[in-house]
Length: 149
Image 1 (cartoon, one colour):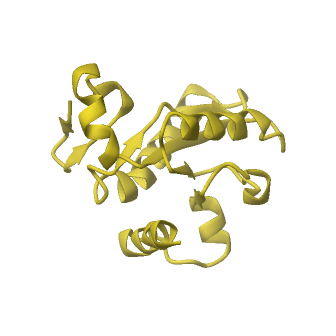
Image 2 (spheres, rainbow, N blue to C red; image 1 turned 90 degrees about the horizontal axis):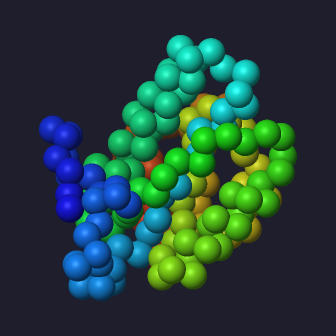
């Protein structure tokens, strides 16, 4: 059910067992949706590097919040400013019992104002552009603030 990759225990959607979900679900109130934002114009090397950047950024959430956050499948492609499908996915995830939905992206410039069904957008690109520190402590504070609202 839980994968240990040497960095800590990480809960992925595919590791949840049907027989234990009802018992565990009260402890998992937050869903993490990785958003790659690929366009299809990337070479295989560029796509791989984008996925690696997103994976490394996601470690700042997955590792410290194991046992409360479940990572769902990545939303890989995004063209332009239309976030309707991503918004719909966030809405549906909430209807399955998650109270909070966090979208994480490393490279995509996402307008958080257009993601009204997302509780928290963590954008590596935006944080860099705004001169924000990018560390486990900063990400932890953002998530804890979300949970305390």
